[in-house]
Image (tube, rainbow, N blue to C red; front, side, top):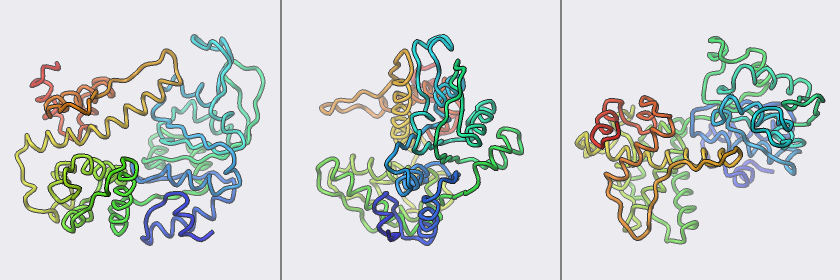
Length: 367
C-alpha cells in the first residue's frame, strides 16, 4: 500500500514532511507486535495514529480497545483493565471481563498513560512481560495475547524523574516512540484539514459546503492552535453552524479563537482589539464545545458503571434562541461540575483567568 492510500484509508490528513515521515514509520512499525508509545500535545490526533497502527497490523481483524486512563477513577481502573470476580468488592454483583480480556488477540490503546496510578503500573508491567494477569478476587491466572499502544501528552522522562511514573515501565513502553507534531509545526496542512472538516460537516448535516475567504484562511494559518487539530475542528464546525451565509470570513472565526495569549497574535488582523468582557463571553461560548466533549466522555464512562449517572448538559431546542448569558452561566456550571468545583481547573477549561471566573460566579450568584 502506498503512503497516500494509507493516509486516505485511516484518515491521516496532511502532506507536510512531518506527516509524511511519520506515516512511513507507522507503516513499518504496524506490521510487528512491538509496543508503541505515542507522544504529543493534546489534540494532535494520537488516537488516529493508534487506529492506523492497529488497522494496518496483522491484528486488524480483531478488537481495538481504547481506554482513557485519566478518565477512570483510580479505585476503578484496575477492575476496568483486568476485570473482577463476583463478590471481590462491594458492588461486584457478577463476574466481569476487563479491557485486556476484551482486547485478547487484538490491540489495547492506553491513552493518557501518565495518569495511571503507580500501583496499577506495576500490574501493567507484569502483563507486558508475561502476557498474563489475575482478575480482582480470582485465584487463577488468565493468559492473553494483546498488543499495547500507549499515548501521553506529558514528558514521561520528567514523570520518571519526579517518581510519578515507573522507570521500568517507561523503558518497556518506549521501544518505539512516535512523536505527533503540533499543528503549529505543520502549518502547511491547516488548509487541507479545514477543507476536510467543512466537507464532512456539510455531508453530515446535508447542507451546501461552507466556504472560507482568503483572509479567513490566512487567519487559520497564522494562529498557533494551542488545542491543535481538535481545536481547529471545533472552530470550523462552530463557525459553520453559526454562519447564515455559508461564507466564513475573519469575523466568523475571531469569536471562536483565543488570540489574547497567542504567541502569533501579531500576525492576526488588527480589529481583534475588543473589550475584555466581550472576549470573556466569546471564550466561554467557545469552551462550550470542549465541555460538551468532556460531558460525552463522562456519560460513556457512566454507562459502564453503576448506578448510571447522566452528567449535566446544556439543553437546547431548535425552535428557541438561548441568550448568551444563559449559555455562559451553563458553561460555568458545567465546568465546575466536571472539575468538582476546582476553580483553577474550571477556569483553565473555560480558557479564562481565575479572576474572571470568580467575577462571573459572583455575577450569576453561583457561590
